[in-house]
Structure formats: structure tokens, C-alpha cells
Image (cartoon, rainbow, N blue to C red):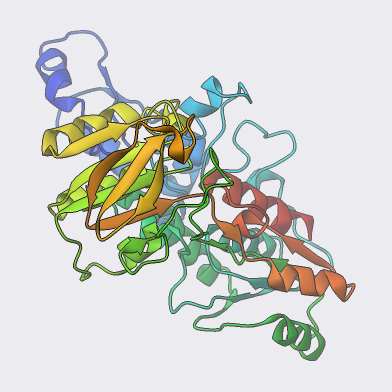
Length: 401
């Protein structure tokens, strides 16, 4: 994701320009227009678009038909393809294409028009909610999508603000474009509580409700390694969530930050890079043995470490937790020792960013279930996880109506 399209051309062209055999180049090409530019320039005869075809097997068909804007974009995150092969599933998948690797039972090619359209209400306009709306509308249902914020996109709008992560926003932009193209009734800046959803279901005659209300940061100072010892001094103005940091780029941050990574995903890495870009030195602590172990299979970690080290001012402490937070400093200790067990260290911390598993926003779902209403729940509202699961669950929910 951190590389531009055609990033391998600098080393490929000196070879291909002299070759007399058919010449193939690769390097994060995502569209036929990009491939055509390379071929017209005489730099190659063939261009590989492997991940682009996984993201949308109809890339050629849609482009030739004059609709390249309908091609589902590869976001180059590697979480479904490379990491899928290396992970427990041991099969190829795709973050943005729920049907990749599951073509016999899932995917756009299996979406059949319904004989009797239903009225579907979807609460939440993040990736899970938009994918559910897109799939349900593709099948011919009449879909209404509610979003509390003034724009669609959910958490991805924040994540794409981090250095080198802008491409993540491509999928939510595509989903937004598709739901409007398919005639979904999108209602922005529309916050609803359980009672209002029940009233809408009754007044507007919705047959099905899909809850995609996401999750919110769990700012309680509880760390997985030592759950019985919450961080002392946690509730202070300079202790932030990643959301606080990403949503307020005018906040005064000071000169030194402590990043506490409880998840082992890329979120803490993105936070670290944002802080470095804003001129802060960073102390990074985690209960894990390394930085972002969940992202090793996606090949994100080493490039991120190269960027982080190049900026300087970075200190890493594995198997470490925070004990207490004061003004301008924090006390850290190994996870395997009690707070009073010694080996405490004091680190500079003008701000502290706490990254932990979020808390699901399930109020609407639980209330509707209690009333006996037919309702589905998808994405982080179901359980806080990541983009591949959100899109997959949204697709399955839209396909099951």
C-alpha cells in the first residue's frame, strides 16, 4: 500500500528496453489504463494485475464496456491475498471482495434478482453497512441506509488519514458511489436510537433491519496482560484514543508520546507514524513480542519499521505494559511482573495514546432482538475486528435478505 503504481518500473525498464523476448512487468498496477500507459510507452508487452483481478474478476469486462469506475479497487493491503495464504485459512481471499476464494458459494456472480423486493433498513454507513446496502440493492431490494455522521465511510475515513494509508479510502469511496448508483436511500447526519428504529420499522414498513453501527474505543486503561491492574492516572486530558488523535489535527501534543498497543494490528503503527510526522518522539510499548504481529503476513511491518527508524526518535519495548501515567511522564514495566515487582522505568509522555480492542455498539441490535424483531448485525457492531471481516459480513447479510 505504501508503494505507488508501477513502483518496480525503475528497475524493470533498463532490462525490458533491451530485451528481445516478450516482456512482462509488475508492481501494484490496479487499472487497465495504467497497464495501457506502460505498453504504449514501449516499456513492456504485458502487465501483471494479479491483485486487481482478485479484487474484481470483472475488471476487463467492466472496463471494455465503458465503465471503469465500477471496477472494485484493490487497496493493496495484502490482508486477504498474501496474508490469507499464510494464515490459518490457508487460502487466498480479498479484503474488498468477499467472494474471492469462495466462488462456489459467495460473490457478486451469485447475486440473483429477487422476485419480491423487500424494504431493508441498514443502520450504519461504514464498510459493513455500505456493502450490505450494495448487495441488497443489487438483488433488487428497496434499501434505506442511515448514517449518524455527515459522510459515509465509518472508521476507514480516519484510518486513511495516516501516512501511506490513503488507499484504504478507495474502497469506501467505491462503495459510496455504488450505493448511490443503485438507488439506495441514503440519509446522512441521521442518528437514531432503538426506539426510533422500531418506530421507523413500523411507520415505513421495513421488512428487515441490518445493524452496522460499528464500535468505539474502550478507554478504561485495562490491559490484557494484567487485567486486574488498570493503569493508574489513566483518566487525564492528555490520555487519548487513536480516534482522538486522528480526528483533531490541531491538538497540542507536546514533544514526546507514549503509544500503548494492545491489539498487535496496524493501528498503533499508524498512530506512531502520525506522531512522528508531527514532530514527536515516540515510546512504543506492547504486550506482544514484536510490532504489529498480526500484519506480518501482509508484509506491512518491515516497510513501516524502515519509515519509523528513518524519522528517528523511536524506542520500542516488547512484553511491556503501562503502570501509571503522570504529567509529562509514565511508568512502564514488564508484563510478567507485578507493579511492585521492580524493573519499573519512567519514560517521557506529554501525551499517551491507548490502542485496545474496541467496544461494540450493540444497543440497537439488542433492543430490537428483545422486541422480537427480525434483525441482523454485521461488522464491528457484531464484534470489533477489521476491514476484511466487516465487508464479508456485510456482503453475507445483504445476500441473505
